[in-house]
Amino acid sequence: MTEVTPVPLSELTTLRTGGAPARMFEASTPDELVAVLRDVWADGKPWFVLGGGSNLFVGDEPYDGTVVRILTRGIERLPSPRPGFTRLRVQAGHDWDALVGHAVAEGLAGIEAMSGIPGSVGAAPVQNIGAYGQEIVQTLVEVDLIDEATGDVSTVPASDLGLGFRTSVLKHHYGSVPERRAVILSVTLELVEVGHDERPIPGEQLRTALGLGPADAVSVAWVRDHVLTTRARKGMVLDADDPDTYSAGSFFQNAIVSPSFARTLPPECPRWPVAPDIDAVVVIPLATYDGYVPPTETVESDVKVSAAWLIEHSGLRKGFKLPRSRAALSSKHALALTNRGGARAAELAELARYIQGRVQAEFGLLLQPEPVLVGVEL
Image 1 (tube, helix red, strand yellow):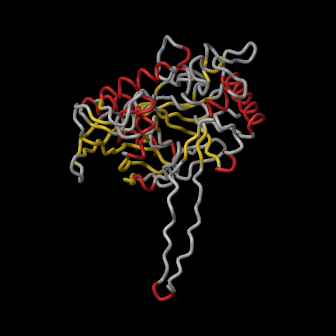
Image 2 (cartoon, one colour; image 1 turned 90 degrees about the horizontal axis):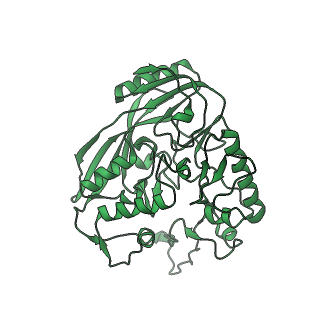
Image 3 (cartoon, rainbow, N blue to C red; image 1 turned 60 degrees about the vertical axis):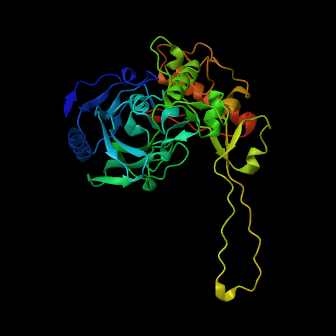
């Protein structure tokens, strides 16, 4: 591990805000990362880890704590117990899109729709990243992590991470603390060996986004190229020459609401069921069975609604900004708050609060921020 001269976090985050921390360390190997975290935790002062800096919104004041930059890299190919599958163990600091590019080059499918998502591999399970119908929960096998409470390193199966829509037990949600305070050291995924031939694409959401029919056949490389093009068109691929990409991606989460609340929204508001409505299994002990089977109660699934649609239809169009502010909605995508150059965190926070207020007044729904907020309040 190496202690380095702290630099302003505005230089290390894609929103380009944040003062310098009191201390900063860089860890380039798993052993260095474990050692520095144990030392930092023993110190007892505030801390956080920094990967790609693409899911952080940091306040303007200097951070009175320690930042640990995770710079570990590496992909290890492992056998899978399932025929036709391969496992990849990837170090936490590895660039996510570089991993996707590697998988596609190797003819492995399962994460190609998540091409272009910025950030590091270790951050991916924390909020169960996803795009166009693919989520990391679909391919994640396990993670190696270190727990803050004990300093112990362990291998944790994906099923123990509480992975849900943009969440996990590791995520620091706005206004709360993680259920499990730990740092991911490596991630193991299980991908399908499809090669480079064309094949029909599973998943209606991905096919719709790419303009494909159920029988249309394309390669994983074709999918990656077209997803990158689609994301770039929305300003969602990092580009130093494009201020629309000076963002933390989608600033607000698509809201998960009850079916009854969803019915209060305009019918044209895009929505998707969170889970299929599956009939419950009724178990009747044989000793008490009298020939009557009670009707099962149908439970409606929750509904995911488009935050971008709600923002635009509350009267805030792409490119909207408050007077004299250097923060604005992206000119390409209403869900991204962007730094148009030199904006302070206070300006972005003011815009975020204004958007929340407009959507709540119009639709009765308070949008929740997706990035991790450090030293800033909404």
